[in-house]
Image 1 (cartoon, helix red, strand yellow):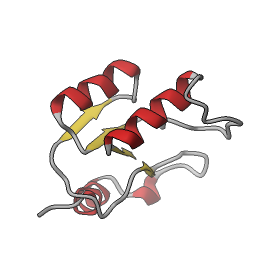
Image 2: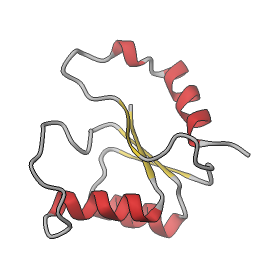
Image 3: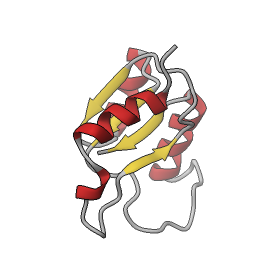
Length: 99
């Protein structure tokens, strides 16, 4: 069975992380690379709508271009939008990879 790490390896052959600028945030931002890979949802960014689509699609991996977190944050409370999104992804077993 394919794993998230397998998809990451393919992505990194195509879009080398070394191509990223020093300030860019690429790679796995959320999730476990050893988890089984079912479906992949590709989006520009992990908006609330894209997260809901990934859930409905049965994705175990979201590949996005814009990082979910770019700057340090102070709270992951589900009462806040970013915390709610991160909690939803983690509880649903959806890994997030930024290319």
